[in-house]
Length: 590
Image 1: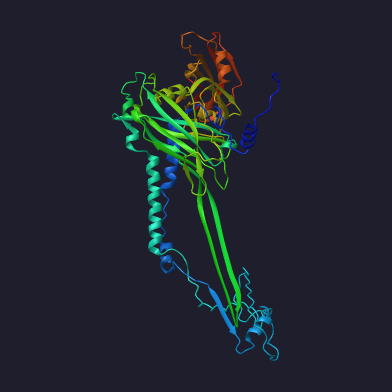
Image 2 (image 1 turned 135 degrees about the horizontal axis):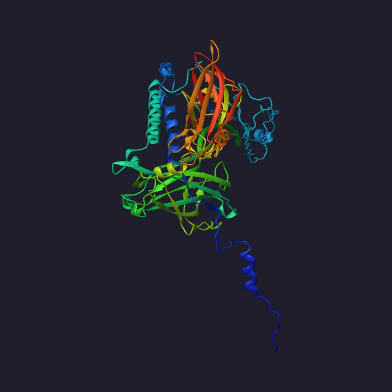
């Protein structure tokens, strides 16, 4: 007997394979469970605080207590009840030796009156008929036209309901209830404003300002079929490493100031209707019994279907433990796919150092993602392993994220505006545009000339990019110089001395009378040496600042001629002026 190359499966093995097709297959979970979390980012805590301050200011004048509404609510009715229920019972019968045969002949159909009496016959078994009609009856005053009128069994018509009294009250909460609701809403407003102001324990550390950190998380959820009837969980643990920072103590604990969003919800409506009626008739022997009834109920309500929930758990060793839960909503069985951006504000156990060179602490962020079963009807999560399917497994992001947190002084010093070049371009005899190039010209940068602040295009300020801006201003105002205030750091003067070009100065002014009312004025302008003391040509000054500008008593004077002097560092300007001469030259460093 020789072995065969092929083999036949055992009958039991074949049966097992056939049954396994109908059973849930348990497979090893892949590493990707459909919840993706990007590296956390540090945001400007001061910018967030300014936004919170704006929100708090907008809430200051909000008042929910309305005296007129309270007075109008004094006559409101809080309840009204009306019950509708109708029933009818009909019993009919016949007497005499012919009674049983009469009901038998009727056949339970409600035939007409019996015929003339006949000799008694053998007894006949009674007929029973039951009719159930689940249709609401409005309660007619008289039986329907099709209702039987004989002696047979029939369901009676419902009686007419009595008409209620004419009464049209004003429904609404009472004055006291309305006052309590308005007061509670005002308290909630106070609670929100206090939260926006932040607690003193989150703002102070060792008799100074406490370092704040705003972390942003980009969370992308892409559930597969195994993630149905489940909520996505993102669990975050944050620890601090001081790296020798003075007065930094991890054991003091990281305080969670705010989680944004704290919750997200959708408004949903549910309508439940139920109506039932019953009608039937029964004939037995010489009696007929009929009964009808109807009942109706309706329930309508609104509720909040929670989409996002935040949570905070205690953690040992001064760490911060928090996270978010994302649930299916609006009757769906899976979490909606897409990206979420969430923020957490942390108060760190470290002072906000004033020295720009001081190194800030570093946060160690550990993220775990998982799925948890969710009951949409009860809006609750639960554990366990139902037989239907297995959820995607948990996943820890390894290695953890290391996020440095700069101090306020360090970020201000790194992001303060820098001015490299200023150029004046005249547009007419009295106006022009100052073109400023440099770096860190972020939105929110303003320029001030004289008593006016230029903050946007409506004022004449255009921020072309982070490295260039333009401001339209009159020549006389620009001659006095200005100030550039950036989004961060200290303000910078708008003069050429702030950059490589150090401007010029009036070295000599000579006025010679040429008549009864005129003077011939000769002005000598010299270029200032650069930061290293080197003398530059005045041509470079003209290239950067444009031609010189002269005003007499505030009125511009046209310069017919100007020429470079024998020295490369000076310029001669000549013009005619009346005897009430008042000279003002435009230009940085004049």
